[in-house]
Every structure is written in structure tokens, then in C-alpha cells.
Length: 314
Ligand SMILES: *[C@@H]1O[C@H](CO)[C@@H](O)[C@H](O)[C@H]1NC(C)=O
Ligand SMILES: *[C@@H]1O[C@H](CO)[C@@H](O)[C@H](O)[C@H]1NC(C)=O
Image (cartoon, rainbow, N blue to C red; front, top):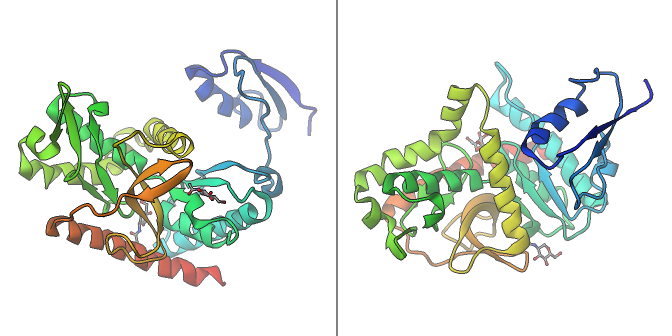
């Protein structure tokens, strides 16, 4: 291989650099065989960037890990084979967390199937508390907020306490029974603010459930920017806590004690976070309409878990 060349990018914390750096790093600019030393001017907090293809380097002494990479579905691939490939990835990364990372590491799993990948990583890192693993449903949460906000004609920030229950898939249940909209300073229940129950119980739910697929259809690519924002929202809340009186959605370990969700699943619940610890918001009244949808998505996860766990020993 050639000697590395030194390449400087200024404005490295900006929007253009965001799309530029990875292209340079993966050889689109200086060639596929040219090693590169990237110098990033303009990122005062960034002390060091450690590029590596080795797990022992990548997982060493981590405080936080965002696991975005996973095996994508390829043309003609069976669901079981896809799951098996992901079990292998997350088993290996869980083992690397166990071996090299701090026991207090906060692990956020994004790569799909996120809930089950997260569970497999947690199971493969038995000395790290299961509470330190979570998976991303914040993207769905943010979508639910903005669907309601658009309908009412307020900014998305004015909508709070929506809930995503279950798997990060089209069986997820976006629930607005406990959500509030801030309209000119007063908090109104979503059903009163929207004044269209059949939309809230119909198209609203399917729009949020199908949003990922709709974006792929329109863009021919998945929703990268909103996913990145959701990852930032999720990790920032773990780090700094959720605002007083607000809860957010994330996939966390179910111990079987909340909302009749079976134990040993990573299931998306409403949570509040304080001092880097989350707590499920318990005791919200659940209507039959909701119960049924929460159970459907739980059943999907149970089935996927059982298949995934059967691959673990192999
Ligand atoms: C659960 O959701 C993930 C992420 O969308 C998906 O890949 C997986 O197939 C879903 N599980 C089942 C059993 O459908
Ligand atoms: C992670 O585990 C540590 C104990 O090692 C605990 O203090 C902390 O609250 C856990 N984090 C979360 C997000 O629950």
C-alpha cells in the first residue's frame, strides 16, 4: 500500500463536511488504495479519531457505542438467513463490548432488526447491565410527533408524550392516548386538539408505521438525516436526561413487570431518564384498542427472539 497522504478539511463540523468526510475516507476522492490521514480543523471538542477495522481497537474502553452497521436484506434473501447473519454480527460485537469496553458503556443499537440485535448484543455481554442497552425507536417517536403537529398546525416541539410500543417495524403501535399538544400555552389532549378520532385511530397509525417504507420508495434510499437526528436525540437524552414532565420512546429490556409485555425482550416503552438511568413510565391506563396492538407487536418480537436465540449456540 502507498504511504498515507495528509488531507485537511476545514469547516469540518459543518454540513458539507458531514457528507464529504466519509467519501474521502472510503476512497471516492484519492483512490481506493490510498491511505489517508484526515486533518479536521474546526472541531474543538474532537480530540482524536481512531480509524480501525479491528474489534479490539474499536470497542476499547468505550463510554458510548452507536451500533448502526448490520446486515441489510439482499435480493432473494430468506428472513431466517438475514436474522442469522445479524445474530452473528451482534453476538460478536456483544462479546467485544464484554471484553474491551467499560461496564458502564451505553449501547444504542440502530442496525435492523434493531430490537433483536440489541437483545443479542446484551446477552453476549453478560457483565454489562442489560439496562445499558437500548434500541432506536426515536425516529418513529419523532414521526408520530410531527404527524400530529402538522395536523394541528403547531411546531413538532409542541407535541409531547407520544408513545411507540414494541418493535421498530410496521407492527409498532404509535399511541397518542397520553400525548399532549401545547396550543398557545395550554396543554390539550391530542384527541381534543386533533378533533378527528378516526384519523388518529386509522391513517395516523398506518402513516407512522409505514413511514420508513414510504421514504425508501420516494428516495430509493432510507431516511438518513432523520435517523441521524433521532440517534442524537436518543443519546443526548441518555446523557442529560429527559425534560421534566416528558417521556420519550426507546427500546429497552423488558423484565416482564410492565404493561404485560413478556420478559426478555427489547421492547419500545415510554421512558423517563435521569442520571443516565431510564425508568419505564408505569401505570398509564391502557384501552382495549391499544392492548391488542401492543400484544401483536410483542408476539412478533417473541417469535424473532426465539429464532435468534436458537442461532446463538450454533
Ligand atoms: C421487527 O422489526 C425489525 C425492524 O424493522 C424487522 O427487521 C423485523 O423483521 C421485525 N420482526 C418481525 C418478526 O417481523
Ligand atoms: C448502566 O449501568 C450502570 C452500572 O454499571 C448504572 O449505574 C446505569 O444507571 C446504567 N445505565 C442506564 C442507562 O440504565
